[in-house]
Image (tube, rainbow, N blue to C red; front, side):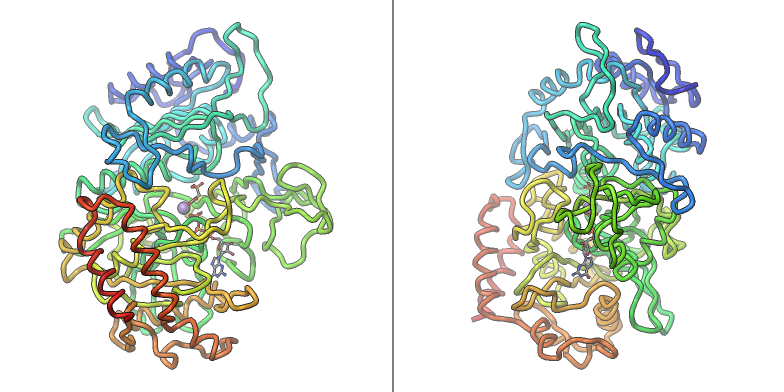
Length: 616
Ligand code: GTP
Ligand code: SPV
Ligand code: MN
């Protein structure tokens, strides 16, 4: 049966393949949402290959997807979004806790009962003429102790197929939701009904969305309501909404961590294995580091996750991490043979591309994929494009969506429900000045200070100005589901609980610029040299020069063999500039002052006092 076949007047609640859930609350929720949103039909996603084929065919017929030339890119598709729906909308993202102080000064807050009313009005009849997809999913390996279950309702087939790549969806997840199993309801509508109040039917467009957008989280009842956008983190609700905003609240309550971090497995030339987690803000290099192909001989990096880490102390008292996702939603521009060959291999096929350019031969292209652009292409808006056009061919936040299994560097442990033991945590952002290439925290509270004082230049991953330096603590500014001061306190507490077993903490910065505005550090595969120094520190094999800001490498202990970098330039990025750091302290003091002192951990105030004093 065609999914978008002839409409019926009343929603039919018969599930085509999977039948209903064993969970009454889930069945009731689906029924209630159908009554509210009034879709033409309800479809329970089963997660089968046949379903993928059917849905993608439907979307090609509808104009939402363009099938790429299978010779170059089998079973792959291009979607072009509406130009007004291209990234996360932070100013439309809300934490709806009863007490506004529980959302804190870094989040937008709405009263939950008022928001619920407003959303109910927006969602009323919002799916008329459309299919309502019910997507059971697991964040994390199916049945794992650290994993969590959710169900997304959406009226977008693009979202349904993307969820199938990004999470473990379908019957297998549905089966795990027993009569008393907790699950997170995640409701999504693009907010573009095909039938009006008066019954007038209109044709669908390639990328339906609404001018009115709301990405709402109810931390106390663990619910997500997202309206009006079909793009990325706004719409794939397992990702930022669940795995970060809602999960961070669960983690606070239950004593674990839900973080905006990649996870890698590093094997040294001596065959010793280490696992690192790293928090960098959006579009600041997580996918690149997660898929690092080291430039230095003997080192191996394997991928466990590229965006989110859930970390919990294990029975042995050590911190264990899983990647709750099943795929990558990676930034396309800047991803190419020279920067991230592993990613270009990963996306050989079975990939959904969004807002990249279309080559005349039916393959995709974006800035940085190849050094020579195609002579002619169709840009992300669907217009003719040539290198002389003076515009970008791919949107700066264009993305690829692909299953993690396709990544040639995926670690065998990536699917292990027990997770991996984390040896070190890295914090980094785009800092053109001040912050050195790498430094080591002297203690857990100092490491939490490094995370809390992170700042980074904004990127195209969110709507708004690009290139503005802003505080982005733990790379979680847009993703913490509760008061950031409480979040800092939770990190301090986790360190107390982990004690001796707490991972080491480092700050890294690939983005220092010289006077001409060029990057000082070559980055990408050369970042392996910094990883080597970090691992050698874990082994106690190299020295960290003690400075007020933390432990810095000695130039001769950083492996620069075969590296083309001016020694003086390198010395400049592994040093402390006292004046710049004094200004940093002033900015951090102002920033810390924005939090409620009753919630703000005194350990961080002490760290700032110590740094200020030590700088003299
Ligand atoms: P989200 O998926 O948005 O959370 O971001 P991410 O951190 O995974 O972003 P990603 O790794 O895709 O970042 C891509 C951008 O970072 C591209 O513009 C890259 O060129 C740039 N980038 C990544 N690594 C480096 C590096 O080592 N040096 C420099 N200069 N740029 C880098
Ligand atoms: C980010 O912005 O950090 C992303 C992309 O990972 S999105 O899923 O759109 O939030
Ligand atoms: Mn991200």
